[in-house]
Length: 295
Image (cartoon, rainbow, N blue to C red; front, side, top):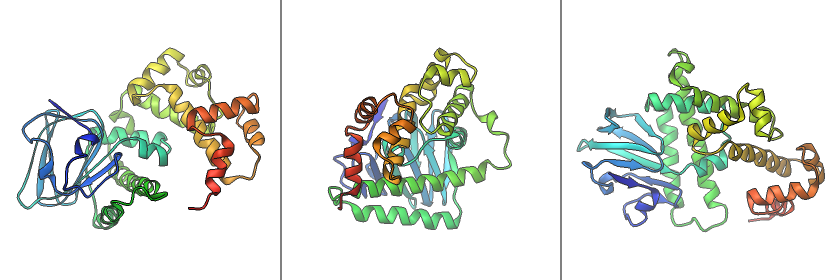
C-alpha cells in the first residue's frame, strides 16, 4: 500500500495548478502505479470529459464515462484504475482546509456527504459541464502568481463555488431516492444535527454539556461520535462556528469589539480577545485592521 498526499505531487512537472492545498492535473500519466493499492490522504475528484476510466475503490468497481464525476473522501483506498486511450480526465485534489475557510458545514452538507459515500459517481449535465469547465480553465491561469496578495483566497473562493455546484448536483440526484436517513449511520446523522444546532445558535452555544443536553445524549457519547464522524473533536467545531460568527460581525457590522464580545456571551473583553487570538493568531482589532487594508 502507498499513501498518497498533496506533498507527493510537489516534484511532478505536468500539473496545471498546485499551491500545496489544491491540485489540478489533466495528465494522469504522472499518477502513482496503477497496480498498487493507494491510500488517498485528501479529497479527490475525478472528472471524465470523454472516453472512460475504471476505478476500483475498496473492492468496488466504478466506471466513469463522459460527463461523470467520482468524488472520494480522505482515507479512501484505491485498489487500481485503468483509463481508455481516448480518456480526457481531470484530477482535482485538495485538503479540507480550503473548504473550511470558505464554507460553513451544515446539516444539508453532511447529508450530501453521506450520499456521496454511498454513491460516489455523479452525472453532470451539459450546463454544469460548461460551468465546471470555467473553473478548471481559470485556476491554471493563476499558476505562478500565488504569492500575490489575495490570490490564494481567490482560488479557495473558486473552489468553494465549485463545491456548491457539486452539492447542487448531489441534491438533484438525491431527489426521488430512499429517505436520507437510510444512507447514514447514527454517528453521521448526529454530527449533522450537532452542526445544525451550532449554526442555529450562531456561535453562542459553546459548552459541550449544554449541547449534549439539547441533543438528549451524554457529553461522552457526543464527543466520541463527533470524533468518529468528522475526525475532529466536538470543541473544534464549536470554536470554528464561534470564530466564523465573530469574524462576520467584525467584517459586516459597525459595532465595537466590546459590543460584539457582549453579544457573543463572553464574560469580559479580555477573555474575548484571548479566545479570538488563540484561534486566529491575531486580535479582533488586528483582524479588523487587516480587512480595511488596501491590496
